[in-house]
Image (cartoon, rainbow, N blue to C red; front, side, top):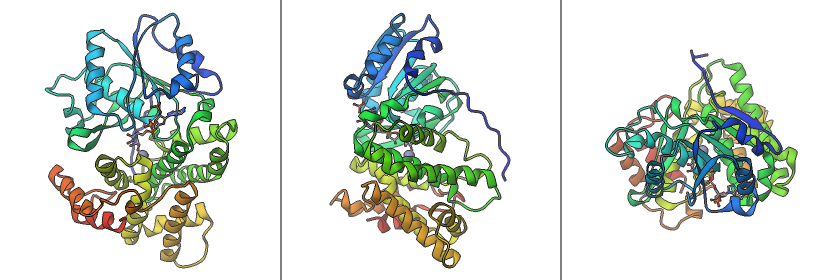
Length: 386
Ligand code: NZQ
Ligand code: ZN
């Protein structure tokens, strides 16, 4: 097991009717900006619950943060924060609203030239306005981690930022919010969380027995609850397990002491930036090709995954590894998620070369758990995913 230091300061408040506890968590003198998306919270009652809980606070609102939070819209929110002397941000939404809020919390305290530097510099964010979240969509784990991803339509870029100041102070997770989520977004949440675990687990063995069992437990739980929650999003117990699995998949716990890959996400973000494909679906497009392309270096963990998660016991290490990749692709299909780029766009010719060049231009010369995947490898993986 590798050495590690682990601290996660986010308080999780989990369970039925917990949104009412907002008032006890936010400082009474805070001037709050409540941030949300396109309006789902107005129709499902979450907006009213938040407003009722914060009746005694000074609360302003900024709405319209879209999926894949857009930089130009966030810049309008930043002006609003500055001109209204906001002191506390409250995200009410899924990964996009929470990530947008994280960007804003950093941008509000940013001293450099343009807040876009926060995305390009890859420096850890050490100072940020305090913020919290009411999670409405289980998927990204953003509610309990210190990462954020922001999109810039103008340049078709989608870049990540992170740092110790970007953990929410607290997040409220009430699984009752799941009942209004459309099937497509539930499928996305399942596939995103599943792939988060794969990125931190399908690398090479480091004798981290507990981390492996944590990872396998999350994967098995996601597989177990997926048919139930897709069939009936108001099934509270299935929803609670789905929600907690998504949080645990990317709150830092399972990555301690082990290598992480994240190449699937790096390539997937480009597909969202170029074609607007939902985040989780880009991962389902890239993952099977990525694992096949890297079979030689990943086969031990892939075979363990096949055995322990999908009960595949027949064959050589390599055969089991390949069967595990096929089972993963089949799992995505059970969620109604297509796994080839050509099933999302007809305009894919040249995508592999374009993304490969972008990585070269950014100086991303070696990605993956060993830093060994060059832009040329990236092009080959993406071409396999056509
Ligand atoms: O905008 P509204 O009207 O609220 O509708 C949203 C949105 O259209 C809807 N929704 C959310 N909660 C709902 C609901 N509809 C009905 N009932 C509810 N309770 O769902 C749609 C999708 O929301 P979004 O926040 O975009 O989805 P998700 O949580 O999947 O977030 C995706 C973003 O997170 C980033 C992705 O790249 C993408 O930009 N990620 C963030 C990560 C992180 N911070 O750690 C890691 C991930 O790998 C990912 O990159
Ligand atoms: Zn993801």
